[in-house]
Length: 255
Ligand SMILES: [Zn+2]
Image 1 (cartoon, rainbow, N blue to C red):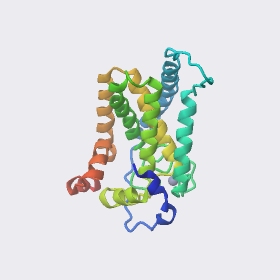
Image 2: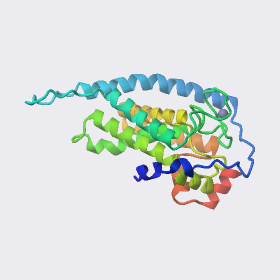
Image 3: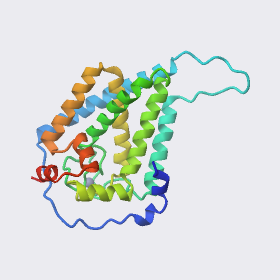
Image 4: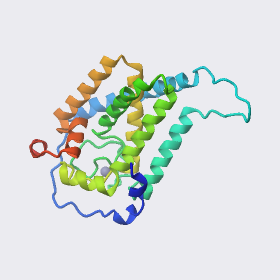
């Protein structure tokens, strides 16, 4: 994905100019914050259980036929996931992304998408689009289930998501977002936010692995609709605005 090229020299390329335009942050109602907080607690609670089960599934698959030669040591899935996360953090650090929001507040969430806190704390409305990434990755990898074990598919999703988090924080994509979307105050994610985005994706993957496909589709639609209604942005709009920027959508989002 050209990520290696992006990393080289990215340190110098990153500049953090002052925002030219100050936008009054859209405040989201307290009830919404509370609802999303409880939803997040629910998701985290489910996530730990689901990931454990996905890992168990991958571990409990029939052992490979014994081979002669040196003993092979099958690494547990969680170790690979930790390695993937560590690699992502290292590359983001090399890209010069901040560890945490520059504001210094250790509040774990931020709900003002037009503010400088967006994508800088652990959780924000876009965390939910990453849960959708996980659901979509599960769906995309499902046809390969005969050829790839559950663990390998989970790790593939993690690698793709980590690669996306890195790509998202290359100067090229940051500039494109700033020019084409409502995110004028966007300088990329903080490393803490990227780690939580990766966890949100794994949560989405684990949820999709346990739900009937139509519940996953319903969850996807509900999250998209709630995001459109509350922050006038969503995964679909995000992709559209990144690939084919539209003035009409931008006007609606800024309105
Ligand atoms: Zn902040």
